[in-house]
View (tube, one colour):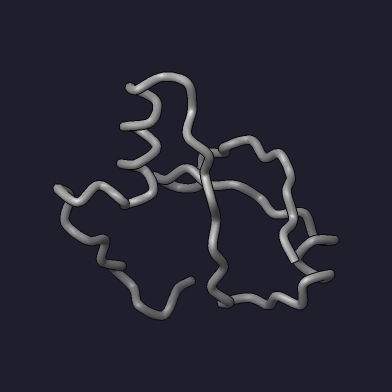
Length: 73
């Protein structure tokens, strides 16, 4: 099942993140630590698309992300 909702980016530590509404989390049976897939639709401007690709780690020129503390989700 696909759930579509609008979310505002928020500052979380040194990162940006979104909050997923609890009714969606509970309805789909997700729990802390579960991996979910998030799709970000392309925007109308090339610059914004480049920023979105960089933020989501899809930019092939970037090195892969490594967590400092592996025990955190």
